[in-house]
Image (cartoon, rainbow, N blue to C red; front, side, top):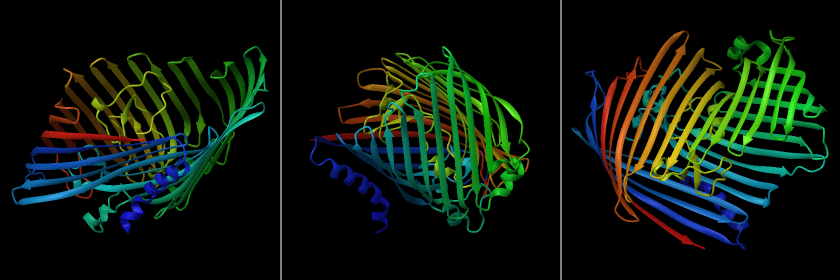
Length: 559
């Protein structure tokens, strides 16, 4: 019964899509793969009590993906099961892991009203110091299962003479296994609380219609509510609006206003101590000048005043906002203003040529882990089949406005993992991705910097990462691939710092023996350094991993 409940949302999403599309053209596609690997792991550590032991492992991993597309609906379901068996000096052992992803979309009224659903099951380490060094073969006992489900609807009223409207509503669930208590009993980490939350979110955007020639206006609102089992409810509301009028050609007068509210049941003491009453309510309003030569090109400067119950009440500041579409391949959006925590900014740059694509973004937000599971992250530059994260299986679109097809996903090959906690966090994130594709060569360079503050602990976490992925086709059937990743995590609690540095290098080769069968070999080296452990001893160690892999792919189509 538990298994049925786990997969019920996937069945519902697929059944709805099929039911609404039974009488129209539809395409159903199944594809899958079976991977079998022999892995040798060897470790080097200076500790006499190290829990790491040289060993051999057998991995068998089948993957099945189903894709349904019709005129009205689309759905994708993908599941992977991993069985692995280890040979140790004291005997053998085995472990099993199951991952799945599903997503469905039904267009009730074309381009006007859609309903959608999605969900996933995966694993990540609950210990910040083992984010990078934990996978199914290494530190697998640090992994906890995370399951998410969501369903929502989207209404889009096309812009007419007077106005245009877009509204999206979503229901979300997030749950993780409480592995920490199972492993350590009553000894809990100061970093983690496990997740069992439900929430809703709504986004609305109202804009002027075509009838307004010299005037323009818009209003955007975002509302989120998360009910956390152990920490109570968190609610947030952010509204911003502007009204402008062209006085002389493309130059005009602009009025702006923002309204922000936050409420955390039982957790206000820490954020209140740092941000006073500004955290609960923060308003701004201002006036300025705007240069707007076209719909997607504007630049404005405003003088704003703050209205709040905190120390910033009555202060003024200069705000700047711009959105500029230089060409179909280059666009920039940026904004500078103030919010309850002080100076605030957002930035986004997207640029593409025939061979190179660049994406740089900076964002700040008040959120939780369970909410971020459903947020759209700063996008990478490569598109991959569902379930694949290897650059050799991916491609780079030739347009910035590429629409993902069923069974496709945008992938960040090097991504910092969000800490598993349901505290409310203030998160500042800078990310960049540069992709290059030409003939037989694919390259992806990623960088991340994330600064996180927490609502309860007097704590700050800074994560830094840089990663490089490359694939070179040296023949019609042979590819050489390589990966480098360096990460650094710093946790500061009550002015005491704890650092973790990890670097990983790998190189491999894959040869396609036939259309369905391929073999490969891979060598990986991991260097992990910890200044201190959390909850149990964690040692500095090096791992060398050698893998031999055989993959069988299959695909069937039915219309």
